[in-house]
Image (cartoon, rainbow, N blue to C red):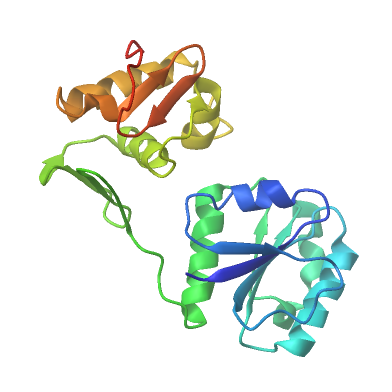
Length: 226
């Protein structure tokens, strides 16, 4: 498991939240923490609120760890021109508005390039196995025939077993912040997933009355009406 340091003056929880589908271990650093522990393999630096401060931190980290740590800079679009002549300071950058899938892929590629093993590509919970590299799912050893969004919804829920998500949260996290469909979109996909899970496993997706849905083996009676 790779350890990744995160610097963000105002949005550190949001930055880490972008990576909640990964298994990285995160440590939060301040603007003066340039001498990083040896176990830190990557650094995500949020420059959207204070570009100059972020640049100073990048330079300080490079002075202590010139090439054995990877730096990913998060910037606003108008800040792109400020990166001119600073190519050696960072390894990659991403431009707001940020897409969680893009950020995860960029960080993984940087870490692998610097010698870190690739993220584990499978999610296995009970009889359900999801291969995140091939987008294949199997249940009790039998392949499941899922659409892209059905797979993405199931993967998201299975990545957070026991955690309850509202329909609105699932819309923004699975379909994306720019998706304008109604909350019933989630209900329709939940019903389809339960039908494909079958009677023996449909309770893996549980309804939490007046809140939303969660994934996990049922331990108490649930309201299964979507």
